[in-house]
Image (cartoon, rainbow, N blue to C red):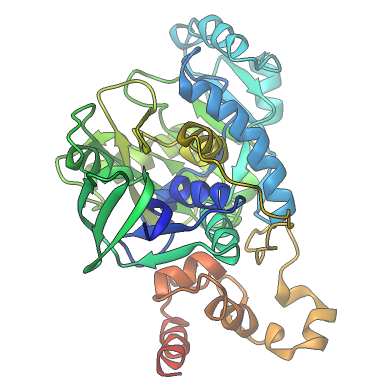
Length: 452
């Protein structure tokens, strides 16, 4: 066998599994069909660090989200992943929605989360001064927070690569088979690799990989979620995450700050036939703007900086679809809570694979470059600029990204290969002008790396 374990899919879950497995004496290969780590569903996540308070009790999801919240909170502090513990308010806009509170509180306590409590109308409006009229009450969830959806999978992948994981990007899987002698062969990216164990963390394609091995357990129906991001000047309008009372289809439209200093509204929830359909729609954006105006009316006085569209790997089942058979781990049906649950999913997968391997010597996780707005960034650090003037040479003025940060990203263990990857590592190209000013210069710096 070439490897001990092959993992298909380098989203946040696949990257977390790679990190977990490389903490042991194992030869691991991580395959990604796209150009980068975390460049699919993971990058368009709503980026909330969930407590799991509202998950269906006694499900795998409820258990893994609760544990994942604790694990990722600790890991983020050690690795420098931007996290902001803002807390959340689940707002009822009429008495019918308020009537759902008792069930939500009961569910939360069944999931082991007891800090949830109801706020009356007056306290709610003292908390969120810019909230639109008509709210009647809210549930406070003080331990919900924000997490960077870009840095998280990159931190996992970086730690895995530094521990010896082989990362192959641009390696879409075209075939998988069990070998008569045991183990698996995976055809990907024009080549093949064999391994004793196989992990299917292919997200939207997880049902397809599962069927290659003869199973028919679930079908992924892509659920399109559109998001709009308002200019940073709107940030003072929203102090906490403002959640909706959930429905059977989705958790509803939320209004939340981001770790980048913006305000985000979304997502929509629409099942679509294509796993590649990440187009925005006029109807979806109109709906989100209407919801923004209803929930926080003042937002409509600010510009929309960007629109993002993500596809969630929804299935016909209400729970994560994680199964183990003879060295094969299927990790499917991981929806928006996958970011929060990622480290717990990885732990669960390692245990389920029943691998016999000695742990490696423990090392601290790599310290990731900070791209969060609430923490010091290079352009404002005089000592850093004195030691290296490139940290004072701004390349992207909208996001105040310096040449030193771009240089470091291009030389990192998991370096970007395109502008989208560079954006997710530095914030360059994601501001008001959307790369109009800095795009050519960034492209030039990428080209210099290609030539060198």
